[in-house]
Amino acid sequence: MITDHNKDKNKCNHCIDSANVKNELLIVTKDHLYTTEALDKEEQRLYKKYMKLRKRRALAAGYKVIATIDEDVLRVDMIDNVLKQEIPNSIFSVITDQYYSSCFMIQTGLVQLKKHCSQCAGKVGLYFDSGIGDFNYKCKCGEMWNYLDKTIWKDYNLDSRRILTILIMFLTGCKPIEIKKLLISSSREYRPLEKLIKKVISEYFVRNLPKFRGVVEIDESAFRSKSKTRAKNKVDKWVFGLYERERKIVYMEIVKNRRESTLIPIIQKICEPGTTIISDQWGSYNKLPDYGFPHYTVDHSRFFVNPHSREIHTQDIEISWGWAKYEIRRQNRIMHNLQEYLHLFCWKRQFKEYQDKVTETTALIKGFCEIFKDYQMREKKIEN
Image 1 (cartoon, rainbow, N blue to C red):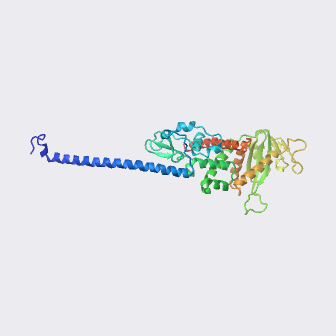
Image 2 (cartoon, helix red, strand yellow; image 1 turned 90 degrees about the vertical axis):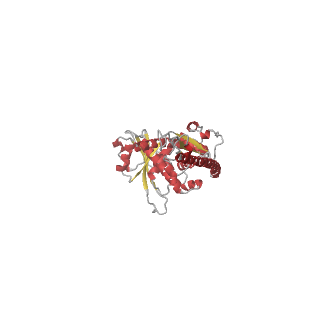
Image 3 (cartoon, helix red, strand yellow; image 1 turned 135 degrees about the vertical axis):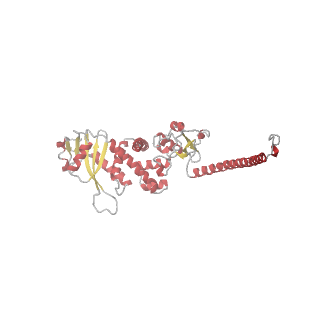
């Protein structure tokens, strides 16, 4: 038995075993440190190689990495940079550049910026990924995702350039085959996005349609499908239309028939009391004065304009019919979901005052952005 432990420490089996274990642990720890350092170096080497390959792949896919961005900026939160970024006036200049497309979607509200991480509720930053020329969110907890993820665009699997390209082509009346050829993709990729665009615009147009006033032209027209299976001379849809001269706004609605009981309630719904109505001599309009609407007619079997007054005509609504049928048939030959296309056409007519097509298209996109911001706010309220 050891009486003095401090003097006879070397004779204590417990101390000897502890010292041996300690030495073994030190050796194992050093080995682990060397292994960890080697793995870190290998990880850095592979990461650099991965980024080079990723950049090559991005360039091969047509993405463009903005050379004007400082490399130091790529490592910091770019929310302020994106919000202050000057965007080209022409939308066609925007969609040719991935960086500008992303900035455009953020600035116009098509994409709402995230402030907090969904995992830890911590603050997130927006960082530019030079490998693909796009933005990612990053959080201190390690969570990272593309800025289009966790948004309404996530289900469409499209980047910002393709989203804006589809938006422009659809709103400008391009045929589905033209969109397909330009994007080199199947209809499964862009059709769902087209449905969203139509839905958003249609709901907004109906909800914000002002009451017609002043002088309003009315008429009804038949929309016939170009489908080969359609019977000869068969009317697919009857559409009733109203055109207000003062603000140059138009409204069109599918009707089941052209009877007085069908058309008069629509006029009462759309027009303010006392609005002057101009139409052809269709019998369903004869009782309009009884409902408080001054009514003037033109005999289309003899004249296009009333010979007693040059102001009594329906030329504006007739022209609108021509444009509506032309634009809708380009995108919807079988007249499927015709009412949404009619709302889309009526909404687009307000942008026809611009002199050149580029300015008109840019105004169309910006108008849609305002509508989409309102749509996202309403969707959030519904979720809450």
